[in-house]
View (cartoon, rainbow over the protein chains, first blue to last red):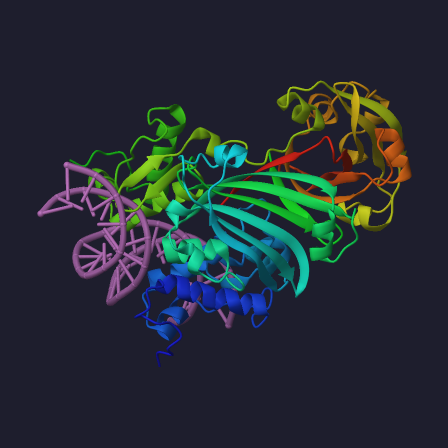
Length: 246
Length: 246
DNA sequence: AAGTGGTCTAGACCACGTC
DNA sequence: ACGTGGTCTAGACCACTTG
């Protein structure tokens, strides 16, 4: 009985389909913490795939903290706290999902522009190079939480301005539609006060505390800047989490 | 020509031998940044292993930041900065020195106490366990920049209350006087407004933006909490820097 | 056209944990 | 004895980059 839970005709890799399938069951609570997951051989039979493919889905879930595995015993759902994405390069969408909130967006502004000044320097733009500007209000469980302004080098994602980003992750679009994987980012974080405009959009009082981040994101070579994003979060609702080492 | 660089009789996995072999060449500088690594097929032939095994060595090096890979091109040595301090666990003293500022401190409060509530939970205190509390104003080039309150588990550093912390790094003291090395920390960051007390101490207006961090620091086993520190930085003077990785 | 990394198969043997 | 995850093989086809 090969239940058709994966689509072998799809361009989406099989291991990825299986992985997302399981991740969804974990995040939705269908599979509870410390509950046993299907074994590699189970997945092999159920989906009609090879063991190495089933295995890859499980090992990636393990490395992302969704699952822990014990030799001779099985694979189990990890405790939620262990999968908190600390100090990882995540999109707003992933960040909210990790916190158990429903991410959303309302597009304020979307256009192709040319820019001058320091923004051009940080992105190391060639002269006249076009930038895709996307400004969105970001929602968590339908409440406005942040204003996010992304500047993307359009030469790496031509035509991206045609997509609707209301319910679409920018990073996921870069990966799926343009084959762009991100490598690392340099981020600064500071505290300031809400301007009249931001206060109105985020439904807080003018002068409320805000957490502002500026993120410069690079491709996997670690050197080519692709995005500069500025985000302003409601200080009363958002706490940033970081894991520090050594 | 199967050069005997890996030992197939060893209990050490083949992929791990190949991985460590390459990592050593990268760290020693035999392979320079952006230099091409052997392809998967090269490693296959050179070591007499299968491609999947060679592949695993390379993909793990990639996920650890030693290598970046590009489809159709090859695998390359990553820039050292990418694998260095992404988010370093640093003291205020080190942080200021990195920025080229002169660190300083004024001790506001220093005492041995017993605590209840959530602080006790976070530090996983045994009942009745003493905590060393140290509250200081932190200075940068002789200007007040932050208020820092540390709670240390006194059982790991008995007698620490005798030291003067005016011009002495707490972390440096733990290391030199008590042989305590820190492993990792979980830190949260949020924005809020200055209270009357904090505003006075830091010489700003009440209601100014402040960046507040709470850091739970663990020993090198990664499990034993030793310090809980809460810091409040002037929002107009301090910007936190973080490096994020995929 | 040749080489590269990305995905996938259908087997195999092993170490480990449970019954 | 049996099922589990850990390692490994020897192929295969694909998409992509470069000469």
